[in-house]
Image (cartoon, rainbow over all chains, first blue to last red; front, top):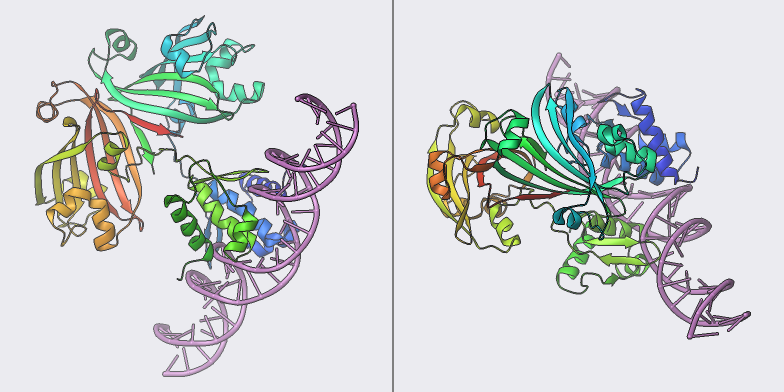
Length: 233
Length: 233
DNA sequence: ATTATATACTGGTATAGACCACGTTGCAAG
DNA sequence: CTTGCAACGTGGTCTATACCAGTATATAAT
């Protein structure tokens, strides 16, 4: 085990909570007690607790103790987590239909956003997303071909994020998102079962890997009447 | 000076950076040097640095040193900062016209969002916001009367956030924001110089004080063609 | 001049102890 | 029984020291 001790302790406490040793609202042992249990100094133990507090898993109260926090479902719009999780978090059954799925040359805009070199190709797919079988959004995703090289179609369409992490050890980092409003075109209106000109919430998102390379450019059009982003700050 | 030493050092370093002692990209003295300068232990000095790193003001690199970071203009949408700052950050000249300004009984929705008791009154004001004299948004702000008690109209309309901080020592905490899309009504279209049915980006925001009390409920309608939110995660 | 290698310096981790302000709890005084 | 206060436990802050792993730089060997 090469990682720092406080990370190891962080993981052990996290696992203990997930295993149900302590439930939401429970007080965990004091820093001094835990320091003895793990056989480390209190400062090191505090570092482990600190990381858990930053993750929102624990809460500290002076004079009272440290408690298991009730995981706020914040960052609903983080976008670094996908549509599937978003729908499930809202209690809706997610599904989707892939409209197209092709390898092609990128548009100028795509090449710029994804920082592509001349001649690089991309995978472009269009999808309609549903929540409880009601159309929620129409999205166009563009991914550099080198990112999805060797992956099967289901591996890409089902959960790209998980596949990238498990199969290629590529970990998503930050994302840039742009939100605007527009009206539905004839084609989009048909996919989303609305009228032409109806309100559309547009989200353009560029996702980057931890090393800063862009790996996905997604343009999503949400039905204004059926979707809303919630942000907490 | 009652605050912890590491907070004091945090503030001193921050002021030094703002004063231009070190510029973006500059290396600041090592932790060991600064610890001697401030006459504290290295651990305490590290705590001060840590808070500055978390604020995005400094960056650390093992083996190289600690550097002044190039302040990312993230959280443009935080909303806890107002329209004025938003426009200035984008290089546009902000202005606004107050359409109405009345004390009245809250609607059911307002009373709920602001957690009002029966009989409580509110200040409701409608405003059109401009960037470089082009209409950008129409907003309706509702504020509990007790929050703005004793404040003049300009103090409320010009910069409510600054006034609350300086005059009443009330500090904004978090905010909840909901983003959706819709179409412009006849009345709104007129204010915003667009056509009825044109795309509107809707933002509903509830702002809370640090103690958790809601103090402002704002509904804003942005012209879809002229405005876009940018988020970084 | 180029390439290894050693050295000095940086932030990262870890220890063991100390005092503080705050919240909780139980005991004593009313 | 209630109230007030003291003792105790908690997380928050701080010290002084040590070693580690990564980076940069000067030095030595080629």
